[in-house]
Image (tube, rainbow, N blue to C red; front, side):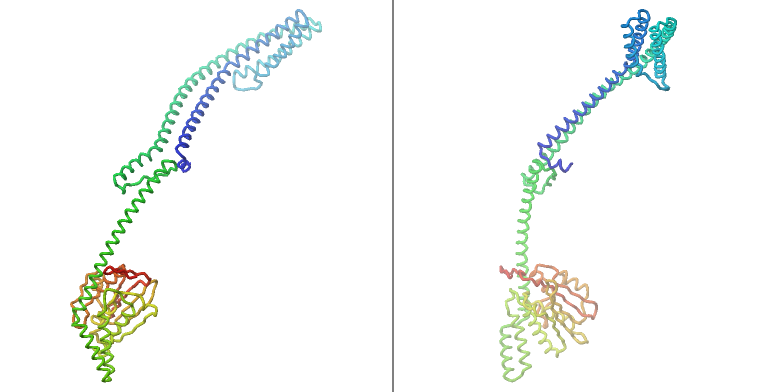
Length: 503
């Protein structure tokens, strides 16, 4: 009912309140009228018994008088009047009590009824004796009937007095009850008026309260406060419709402002990422330049040495010089863009070849690469610095067989790159420093290109826009280190660098 009421219009609510109030007033008036009728009915019944006894006494007197007249005159009119009076009296005594009860008045009624029946029998015998000209008999019956008549008169008189006293008490009780009833009727009318007033106040308040709340919120919004708490409304009437429309309008304004702020924050963040990416790339380039002495001259010199080795038929020397030249050719690329994963793998191959020439083939390098992973785009100089870190800090000084594995797979929309060594491992606190960005790259030495793990991780995070891009795992001392890269494989990875967008 409450749900249905909330869906009514204001007009329907007002009509409903009016009808309920009118129906309530009607019911109260009907109850008061019914109560009054009940009282009046009881008042009417009070003296019915006295009236009946008076009628009974009159009927008895008529019988006695008509019987006496007939006995004296023996006229047909008096006899007819006697039989009529007898018939009427028979009807009157049928209303008297005929049972034995514990009520004194009822027992007196029973005695009167019994005497009446005896009296009627004797009067009939007197009339019959008169008609048969039996003077002695009708005189005897007449004396008996007269005696019973006198006794019955006294009984009826006594019963009538008794009934009158009883009825008088009932009259006093009913009068008092009617007075109390009048008081209660006034109380009920006052209570009904109070209840109706309260209902009207509640209904009008229910209608006007949302309007007052809406007015207050509208004033706040007009002053520019869009974070004000909006009123809740369940009613489906006109006020509810206006309130919901206002809520939707304010929510749309809030959404527009939030979207505008978000857009500005995204633009600011993107610009910040561009500057940071550019700074990291410049840092990487600077460190490359710091570790290279005239790389163009060195590259041309290496080419000349490769040609000379080929002319002298020194194949191993030629292969070595070619790998070194390819390594430096990759370093001379423009590092502002991105490269394919296969190019990074080739750079790792050249780097391992150079190291094995230097260290007499001590490094055993294995690759497990999915064929469909080579074409994804990544920032340059990502894999080689990680492999270099494995060599310099993991396996360089170990006494056992030196191994490095490169494994590349796809997994749930990611290209997973694993670079694993069997070196001395890395301490947990060092891993924590690297992952939290608190580690600083060491000064480049003769065997390092100067690009540290921290720089690699920062550039990957900026390039892909996500933090969970790298993981470093070490099971313990002398148990090796495993570096995991999780690169998104979906098309559409965006890089903004120096005002350009790569998709």
